[in-house]
Image (cartoon, rainbow, N blue to C red):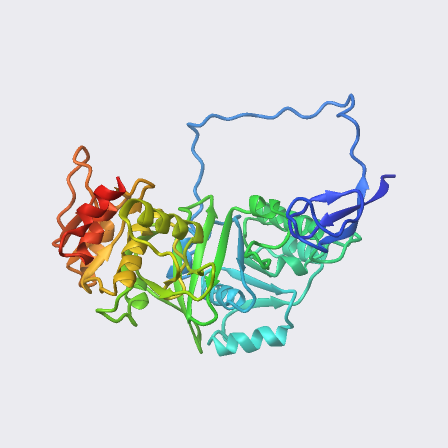
Length: 466
C-alpha cells in the first residue's frame, strides 16, 4: 500500500514544500501554503517489466477533419478560430462578475440547435441558472442542466451520454475528486479534476468548456500546468465602469492567438460588437489637447482607439505616473526618450495616461501615439481631429516600422480619417498600398514635435540632444 505523506502546496503558484511557511519563496505571496495529503507511491525506476511497442506513422498520412461547431455568436467563434473543435478543451478565465457564466450560457443556448449541450454548475443551483436563462431569452432552449461537483459522478454520467457535443463546467475550482483528501479549489484538486474531465472529453469527442477563477494578479487560479493541459485559453476582460467586454485568446492550438472578440453588456446579456473601432471612438471629442487616435491590430482585426494623456504640475517630491490600459514600463521609456533625445522635460509634472473604452493595448506600435498625446498635453496643442498615429519608438528616438500598416490605414480611412502619422516606409519592400489618405512619415520623434512647433524648433532640439 502506498505510503501517505504530507506536503504544503502554494495555492497561488503550485510550488510544494516539506513544511509550512508564512510566505511562498517562489511567488512571494503570504499565507497561501495549504497542507495536502499525497500518495508517495512512485516506484524507483521502471523495473524489469517491458511496455508495449508504439506504432509510428508518417506526416504524409490523411486524417478525417471533423467540422467545427458554430455557435452563431460570431465574436466567440472568431476568438476560438472559427468555432469549437470536437474533443477540445477550452479554459475561460476572468474577474468575478465580468460575465463568464452569461457568455457561456448564451453560447450553449445557441449551440443547442445543432448538438446536445450540458451545463454543469458547481456554484449556482438549477433555479438560479434557469433565472439567468429566462433573462437572456434562452428559457426555451434544450440545454441539460445539473448542479454537481463530484468528478466521479460527472464522468460516469458523461460516459453514458452519447449525444453530448458541448459540456460546460462552471467552475473547475468547485470540482473535487473523492480520492484526494484536500479541499475543492486546492492545487491538487484543480489539477486532477481538470485532467480527468479533459481525458473523457478527448475520448468521447465533445467540446469541454471550463470556467476558471482568477487571482488578484489577473492570472487563472490554480496550478500553471492547467493552462498547458487545455487546448485554448480565453480571458474575459473588462472594466466594471465600462459596458464593453473583451474576450481575448491567449493560447489556441486550433486558431490564431491574441485574437479578440468585443461584447457590450446590456440588460439582455452580452451583445456582439461587429465594429469595435466605431464603438471605442463614439464618445470622442475633437480639438482636445492630449488626445490621439491609435490604429492598432488585435489578432487579425484592426482596432482604432483613443489614447488620452494629461500633464499637470505636481505638488509632490516624486511626480505621479499613472497608466490605465497600457504598460507603465513603456510609458517610462517614452518619457525618457522625449527628455533625452528631444529636450521635452516632464520634471515636476504628473503624467496620466488612459486608453479610452477599457481596452488594454500591448503592442509596441502604440509608442508613437502615446508620445503624440504626451507632447499635445504638454504644449496644450490638440492633434488634428482627422488623423491617426502608429509606430514603434527606439531608445535613440527613431520611429521604426510596424506590421500590417496598410490594414491599419484602410480601417482608419473607412471611419473617415484622412491623415496618418506613420513610421518611414522601407523602400526595399513592396510599395505601400494607396488607401486615399495623406500619410506623413515620421522618422524621428523630433519630426513629430515639429507638428506642435510650426516655427521649426524640432531640428534644433534634435541637434542639441545629439
